Amino acid sequence: MQPDYSAEDAMGIIVFIRKLFWCFFCWKTETSPEAYLLGTGTLITIPFGFHSDDCPLGTNNQLAEITQNILRLCNPNLVMPREISNSLCAKPGKKLRDITKSHAGGEAFDIFKMVYRSLVFCGENSHKVAIIGHPMDVCLYAAVAKKIGLHVVIPDTSGVGYDTLSDRWWTRNAATFTAYEVAERLYALFTGKI
Image (cartoon, rainbow, N blue to C red; front, top):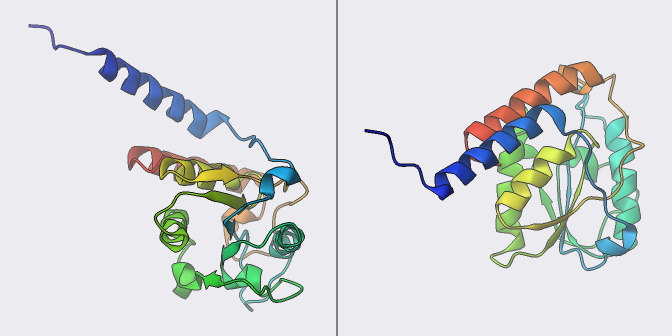
């Protein structure tokens, strides 16, 4: 006897295959013009590169500068690790959620914990969230945030490069980052996070 497949099962398989394709081949992220950032409730800034002396260098400085420019446009709640907040030129007046414990003791920064914590920080009401990160890194964060019901805008960070001084091997160049990111995306897909 043939198993009975519904149209819903077929759509689920198609969606899974599309996401699997995305894991390997989709690296461009649609960025939003500055006008779309107005009304942003929460700003999540993702670090890219870590340094043994805890000094915010390189890529994190660039991301902090972009964050600073956005803070001139709107007054969101901030969710970011100390690597970024220490690099801000001026201390923001808005409430800051520091998420350094996500990678304490040398453990890799957990993107999923960060987005879920951000959702709790935002409250139950889904609202506009801006995610700032390395252009190759922000795709997965955006996918996770959209899956949990947040309206996501992504500022242009195309000028941000790799961090050759990073303690994390995967953030030093494009080749190592791509290998690491594909593994992260597959993990997110098979655990239902995207």
